[in-house]
Image (tube, rainbow, N blue to C red; front, side, top):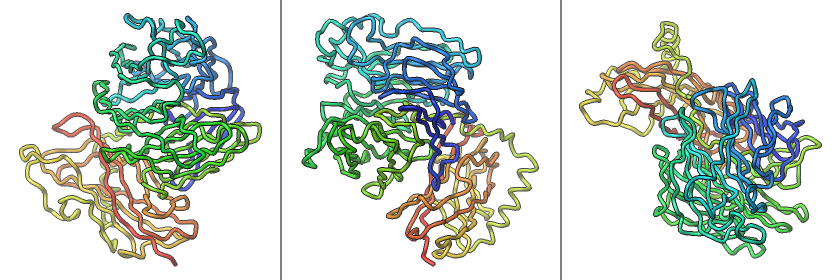
Length: 555
């Protein structure tokens, strides 16, 4: 929920509280921000906007100025990022990055501060740049954060450039090699973890992004005309320099400018997208399949230039699973509607959202955490209460009457049978539950266009010696093979609590699939993401994903 509200550009915003597979986010306006590039915003655990910043000023949700004098720059690609304090839910760290056009000390900052919401007390941290051994370096306009694997702490990563601390002349454009700088944000505060030389030059312009699974970093390498992808360990904060994979911008189309600015991962972290930047020319969105060793670019979107300005700016993943891109100088946002899908099926829409009057989109979109855990498995389930047992028994009886059942790809047995596996602890098995999809009418003609159909998902614990605690279905997504999904909705589509899964037991939940448009017939998959707090024997959180192939037919 912390990414539910975006604030960016001139007075512009988005509210994702109503966004799902069928509905886009709601455009909002009336904010005080006016930034060409960098910005950040954050909401509380319930999705209420707390504050936003351009890297210089902090405004609260009522648009009142709360803090001034931050050391970022609204013309920095990523001027700022906001990180929750793991030790205090009312406090937030704000990290800022200055612009490359300001090379003279003491203005070329990478810095941070701690903001207590409520009292709005802001404590400026000592400059994070002035650490031993960093003389002669300045930060590039890049900063991102990745949630620690423990789902409590965070890693903040930026890039330093050699020879841009004001000792050079000119515009401040970096003339040396890049170095990753990583910080840990935990209950003890902010600690400098270490610096990792990249052994290559990194251009100032362009975004640095972490993948949703926390295992990769991607750099839009500006005028160096490429994208750099590095393996990242979100348990240790280590970056594998030797694992670098480079994506070169193609020389075609003929009118392309190869400067790279926006970059973003798909929700499943298997696909990368990036866009070019040059005034007066069309914008292009390229797709990269990350599942193969050798990375290549596929053109999936062309954005006409409205006249002299940049056609495309930042790319940013929303909590609804779509990737949004900035249409510079306009009041529209484009979107990649199915970013997990390879090829043109990813469905690039150049004018997906129109913003209210007196708002303008520029190059930047909010710099957000790519993988907030947000305690997704702690949903208030107290553990096998009597009401939950009774409700589950009723749902299981309904599911038993359904005509067609699809089993997830596993060795699971009948979900309503008495069979139970041998000891999980002593059998060296993968501790994964079994999933079943119960379709209403038949194997093919389940749901028609302009129709509503109920289906059920059953989750079973096939083991006799473990219990899944705080089990939750975190998201249910309809994924097309060749068709768009804008007009098909699953309700509910996220955060479904299943309480606990006792040994050799099952839990069933009820869903509805709603179609409200023509041209929705085709082959789809229902993808179910889940998590659980811990097993009764093995502690530590675990996540997973299953998928069911289904078909929707015409009337």
